[in-house]
Length: 186
Image (cartoon, rainbow, N blue to C red; front, side, top):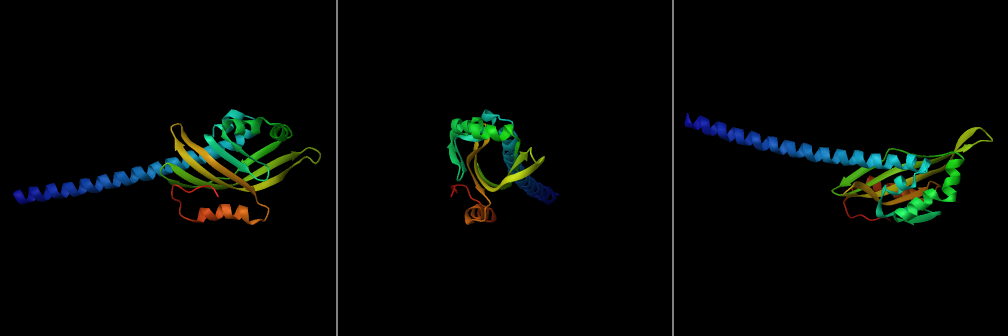
């Protein structure tokens, strides 16, 4: 009988260890999923923020020292410059004449408190004379993100027009490789 009790105790210990391992694995998977959803939502907020002219909401998607590159147009660094882009005459002219910044769902890779994401962005404009919308720009986007106390923020975003040159394709090439924290914008 003593052997049965010892055997039952050992069996229970193994089962408890397996359960702990299973719960830890599920917890890690859930954290990754939550991070991917949070980053996807952050990316999804960009279009409505800039198209509504909400400069502060758009700028706050970035870290305080975040960078937004849109060659050959400009590079904006920090909340003030990014908000200034949204409030600027060029952007205001776009949205007052009918413009939509449409971003596709991103491919997201997370490693701890850093992440990368890749997606397409379309700049769709209204042509009142022809009573139609047209795609003014299609671009490749690469995002470097980091977890901050307030949640995920953009550390660096590169937007390159898909004009047949190698640079936009190179942005997407990184998405086919494993991601490890510490990678830097090209």
